[in-house]
Length: 327
Image 1 (tube, rainbow, N blue to C red):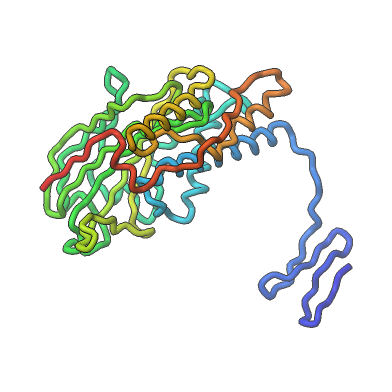
Image 2 (image 1 turned 135 degrees about the vertical axis):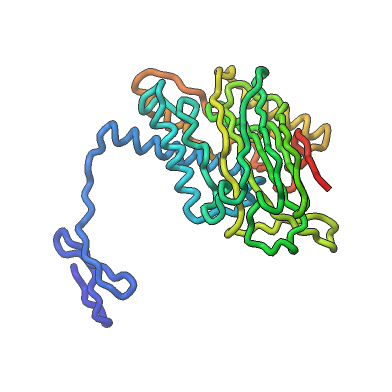
C-alpha cells in the first residue's frame, strides 16, 4: 500500500513498484526479483570474496609500512587487483584456484595512496631480484635526498627521510604469514646515500609466496621524547608493492600451525616480538572446500584461530634485518 505522509512524501508498495523517500526526493523502483545464479556466476562471486579476504590479510601484514595512511579507494583497488591475479591463473580454473595459482605480477606497482604515488615521490627506482640461494636482493642507486625524494612539507621542517623495504611471506593454504625481513635506509635532508644492495637473508617458510613493499617517510625529531617521528599524513604517505615471487612447493600438513607455535615459544623465551601470524580473517579455503566438495576433491583443512595479535607499529625494528643511516 502506498502512503502519502504529512510532508507530501510518497512511500510504500503498489504492485511491483516501490516508492521511498531519500534526501527529500521520491524514488520509484521495481520490486527485487529472485533469480537463479549459474554455476559460473557463483564461482566468480566466490572468487571475488576470496580476493577481498586475501586483500584484507595483505593490508594487515603491511600495516607497519603504510601505517594506515591510504586513500579512500585503496581497499577495493587491492581486492580487484588480487582478483585479477587469481582469474588470470594459467594452471587452474574457477572453483579450484587461489592466489598461489594466480599471476602475481598484477600486484606489482599496486599503490596504497594515490594522493602520493611512490613512483612520483621517489625519483630513483629500486631493482629487485633473487640470487642463487633464493634470497631477495634490492639494488639501490645513489640517492640525493634534496632531489630524489619529493614531499609537500617544507624542507627545513624535515630532519630525515626513511626508505623502508618490507618482505612478507604469505601461505594462504596453511593460513599464516611471516615477516622475512625489514630494511630501513635513512638519510638527512641534505645528504646523499651511496648506491647499495639490501639482502633479505631471513628464512623463507615452505610453500609461501613473497611480496615486497617499499615506502617513504619524512621524519621530524621530537625533542621531548628524544626520537624521530613520521610526518606522513593521509595526503602524503608513499607506499607500493614493488616485487612478488610465487610459491614453489607445497608445505606439509600442519606446517603453518607448527610455524606459529614455534615462533610463539621463541618469542616468549627471547622477549622479541612475534613474527609469524595466523590469518584469522581469511576464508578462502572455506570457499574452495565448498566449491570442490561436490567434485570429491580435497582442500587444506582450516586451521583453528588461536591468537589475535597483530604486528605492532613499534615492533617492526626488531625484525631480522639492518638499518642503514647516513650522517
